Image (cartoon, rainbow, N blue to C red; front, top):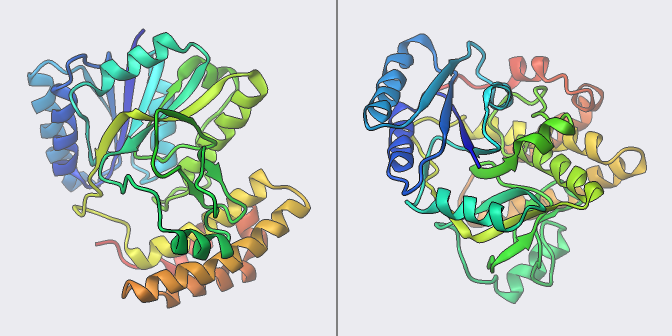
Length: 326
């Protein structure tokens, strides 16, 4: 079995270098690592150095450059270029424990019905949530009252993994920081990342992975999130989409995803669920001392611009509401 790794990076040379070095330290290295760099011209020399350092210690790294800063386009470029039997999509701020590639290959070899494996984040809370938190979240439709036994995409277009993750648990989606897919299965079903969503805003990986899950379900194949396959998602602060703008995009993306996944009356039920779930998110932000007004405003913008968002036409929204990138 051969393994490709696709890493989309944007203005994060230091984080990328750390990620590549942890891949270099694998007890079993991937066949190839494809870095898709969307950084502006002034940032590319640092990215090249990070790649050269990894090549010097024997990692097979290929570089693709893109002039368009788009998370979905970058991953599609990597997907189209990959040659491995399986592909890992990894963020550029993830530490790979030294045995994760070997563990992945062992799991795939032992379970040929698998087509997607999502990693557990070693830094995430591992215990179950207190009953009051489960009840509060369930009331606002952002989680379930009973502990999840599988990964779920909820009606409000938010998605959750079980807490804790024990063994291999079926999942309807994968969190974008690290997940592996069967390349041939993806190609056979014509699956790609939806390039109408260009910004790093939490939902674009959910759509791709949920569509993969639906194809797997129809084909009698499996998608799991695994306790054994674990990485550390560092959530780098080297560069991040400005929070205020990311809040807007995350709401707009979920509305768009609902239009793709929930046609007809299902879409309107999802919109209602999103509005109700907003109350939970506002309460969480207030209790955490975080800003919430922009998040509420995003929902009103979504209603005002609903036809454009349902069509995936975000250009005018970006132009009107994007803050200067830092």
